[in-house]
Structure formats: structure tokens, C-alpha cells
Amino acid sequence: MQSPIQLEISRRNLLISSAATIAVTGAATGEAVAQGARTSMQHMSKVSLSVNGESYNLDVDNRTTLLDALREHLHLTGTKKGCDHGQCGACTVIVDGRRINSCLTLAVMHDGDEVITIEGLGQPGALHPLQAAFVKHDGFQCGYCTPGQICSSVAVLEEIKANIPSHVTGDLTTQAAVTPAEIRERMSGNICRCGAYSNIIDAIVEVAGTKA
Ligand code: FES
Ligand code: FES
Image (cartoon, rainbow, N blue to C red; front, side, top):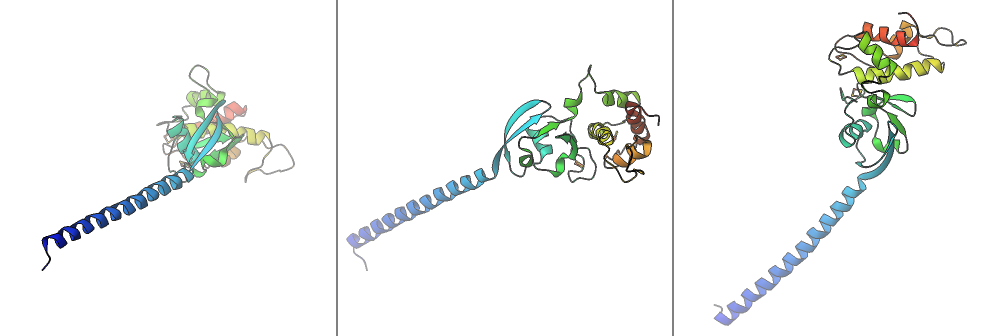
């Protein structure tokens, strides 16, 4: 049986050891939080982009796609997210002169690149010829695929002008022609659920100066 003095001493020891445990645990927790913050900082990168002629410096999570950087960071929502894995072409933008699916590439891979989105091609009152031709020929219904279709078609006409062959180009020794077959082949990565394909072809060949 413990005396009241012994009981008091053991209670004091218990309190001291509990306080020490809390201090050690608190320090460990603080270290873990600091470690977590350091780790999460390592997930971030600085990216400089030129988008539609404007310079932007972004802090992005390394996992951010170019599509999400454009839509969520820069609020350029003209570029659409359809499938988000490279199957529909709704997210097509032009990077350093070449069309790409912005959902399939990370923003951090484009530091210093020049990006053109549908907003940079033209605006109401000053439409790009292809934007005007899509309107004239009803090259859309719901319009969801249209920004990607137009960005793609702008790049397609440049590809043909640069004599870059496609699978349907017959003679590789002469200048590639803008034919409906060439347009269909080169635009095959841009899906339109509304089925506005024939009007899209009409719009593109008209701008290219060729009859469909
Ligand atoms: S959203 Fe990028 S290809 Fe469909
Ligand atoms: S216009 Fe609706 S998906 Fe193409």
C-alpha cells in the first residue's frame, strides 16, 4: 500500500512523462508537416507561356495538363475538354505552329512555347477566315467540337502549304493539293458528335480556294 507522499510523487512523474511524450510527438508532427509542405512544393513548377501573344508566368502542379492550364489557370475556356485522353480533338490548340491535343501534354513541357487558342485566332467582329467560313457553311451544331476543329483546320492548311504529306497524298514529288480527301484524312482526329463533317469540309476547302 502506497503512502499519500508516494502517491503524490508517482502522479508528478506521470505528468512529467506525459508532457515529455506530448513534446516529442508535437515535434515529430511539426517535422512531418514541414516535410509534407516541402514535398508538396516539389510538385509545383514555374512555367512561362506565350498565349495568344500575351506572356504568362504560372505556378502549376507538375501534373497539370496544358488544357487545364489554359482553362483553369488562364480562364481561356474556348478550348474544350471532350474525352481528356486524346480521342476527340476538342482540346486542339496550336503550339509553336503545330496542332496538338492539349489534354495529352503537360504544361511544364511547354515552358517558353507560343500557344494559340481559338480566342487568339479571331474575335467577334474580326473573325479568322476559317471562323467566318464555319459560320457561313454551318460547320457546327452544338459547337462543342468547333474550337478544336477550327484550330486543327488552320494548322492543316499550313501543313499542306509546307508540303507535309498525309496517308492519302499520292505523289510525294509534287506540292500537296488541298483536296476534300486530304482534308478528311488530316481532320480525322477531330470528332464531331453532331456530324457536321460535310459542312466542315466545305468551309475548309473554301478558305483554301478549292471547290469541294
Ligand atoms: S479532350 Fe483532348 S482529345 Fe479529347
Ligand atoms: S458541332 Fe456538336 S460535336 Fe461538333
